[in-house]
Image 1 (cartoon, rainbow, N blue to C red):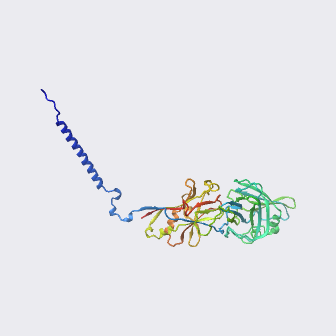
Image 2 (tube, rainbow, N blue to C red):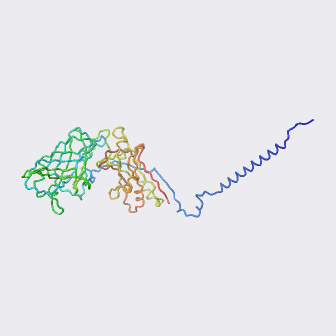
Image 3 (cartoon, one colour):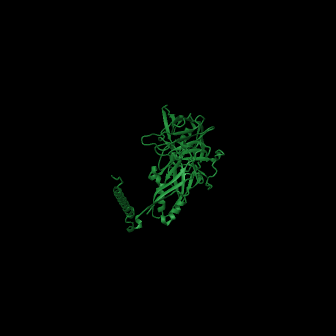
Length: 450
C-alpha cells in the first residue's frame, strides 16, 4: 500500500530563496538612499571656501506706488516746427483746441522789375492731413505781424503776437477731402501784393544788414469756421534734397512790354524761415458730464489725461524710487527691468482700442525744473516701447537706463517725477486709469544684488 502525502521540502526552499532576494533589494535601496542623502548639491560645492561677494541674487517687486495727476501748461516751446496746424478740434472731454501758426516769407529771388502791374496773386498750400467737417464752409485768414522773428530764438505755444492791423480775411477755401493730402490753390486779393511791393528796395535777403525780413516780418495764419470746424496740418520745414517747396505765394504781373512775370514768396523755403505754432485750449466747452474737473490742483483722480497739441499731460510721481536709492543695501545693484505699466480707459464710443495714440512719450524732471525725454528712448525706441498693447489694454514704458542712472547719480539733480505727453502730430488724445482705479498704474522693478 502506498501512502500519499504533501512533501514540505520544496516549499521551504522556495520560501527561503524569496526572503533572501527581498532582503538584498531592501539593503541595496537603503544604501542608495544613504548615498543620495550624503551627496552635496553640485551648485553648493565649494561655497564654504568662496567669499559672499561672488554670489548674486535677483529680486523683483511691483508694489511701488505710482501717483498720477492731470497737469496743464499753456507755455510750451513751439518754434521751428516740422509741422504746422490750422483750425479747430473738439473733444467732449477736453473741449476745444484752436491752432494757428506764424511764419516768415522767403523771397524766391531779388526784385528786378522797374515797371510792373500786378495781375493776380495765388496761394498754394499742401495740407498733409485734414479732419473735421469738410462739407461745411471754411475760411482762411492771415495777418501781418509787427515784430521780427528769428530762427535761433525761442517761441512758445501761447506767444503774444503783435500785429500791424493789415489782414486778409475770410478767404473761402475750396472743398477739402478728409483723411488725404489736399493740394489747394487760393485767389488772394491784390492788396496783398501792394503791401509787399510798397518798398521794392527792401525785396532782398542779406545776412548782415536789414533786409526783407525786417521790412515784412511775417504772417499769422488761421482758419475760421462759422459752423463745424476742420483741422489741417502742413509742413513749413525746408524740403529735402530732391524735393521742392509746396507752400508759397505767386504774384503774377507784367511789365511795360506786356511780358508776363512771376514773383515767389515761399513758406517752406530751402533756407528755413523762422516759424512757430500757437495752440489755444478751452476746457470749458467740454460736455458737462465729461468735463475734466481736476487740472493742476494736485488731486489724485481715478483717471488722468494726455492731450495732443501741447495740451493736458499726466504727471507721475514714484517716491518709492528714492527710498530704493537711499537704502544702503541697494547701493550695489544692477537694474534688469524698470517698467511703467499704464492701463487705458475706454468709454465704449469715442475712446476705444482703435483710437489709441501710437506713441506715449515720457520725460523726467530735474530739481531745476528742466524736462528731458528719458534716455531709454534715444538708446532704443523699440526697447523703450510706449506703444499701445491692445490685448492687455495698457501702455508699457521701459526706463531701465534712466533707473540705473538715477541710482548712480550722486549730485541729486534728478527727481522721481515724470510726465507723460503726446507730441503735436499724434492723432488722438488718451485717457488713462490712475491712482485708486480698479487697475491703477504699476511700476515693475527687477534687479540683481551683488
